[in-house]
Amino acid sequence: MSQDVVLTVYEKPTCTVCRKMVKLLTEEGVDFQRLNYFIDPLPRDKLVSLIEKTGLPPREFIRTREKAYRELGLKDKSIPDDIVIDALVEHPELLQRPIVERGDRAVLGRPVEKVLELL
Image (cartoon, helix red, strand yellow):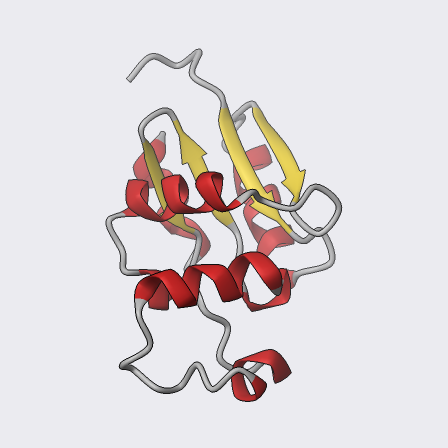
């Protein structure tokens, strides 16, 4: 992949894992852009695209310790992917972070070293 393809980190800047991701990328000398999805929410189509690029099921993107997880009954594994995605769009605090995208690939940055797959 061409090195001029922008690496984008979708994050919450106060998140410890997101800060570790930024530190790792900076130490590696990687140019990247940061997008705080609490300020600039991810539209549904963008979130779907990111999820598809990782190859992971939507359920892998849910933060299970959040209040909304319990309130929305997302523990129920029979809930369809579309409903899970709708919940992630409506409640950005449920979205695992960071998500890192480069071109036609993306990774869920847990652990942060997963980002190295995109370099």
